[in-house]
Amino acid sequence: MSQRGQSLPTLEHASTVLNNAVQAIGGPHAQWTCAEEPESGYDQVNRRNVSYSRWKVIIITGAHQRTLSNEAHLDRAIGQRMACTSALYELDRQYPEMKFAEKLGLNSTARG
Image (cartoon, rainbow, N blue to C red):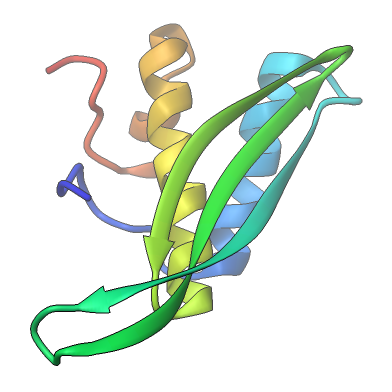
């Protein structure tokens, strides 16, 4: 993952901010979920097989569903937080007029 800015400090904060952003876009009934997909791979540095999780943030607005982020990490909490933060950056890119990153004090990706 490339560095796009600062991470949100905690998973709880990231979840709260993402929930507010999704409802601002999709209305009060809009929802999101952070889905875990267990995977495994080979760690070339330590030369061993490792298990990790891929986290996808999916938003549901009405009959529509879309994936906003797809992040992988060995640590579950960090992976979830990265996925939530990445989803917020993606919403900021898609809806620059909402200024999600600016409101959060994060670097915006929408204005290059």
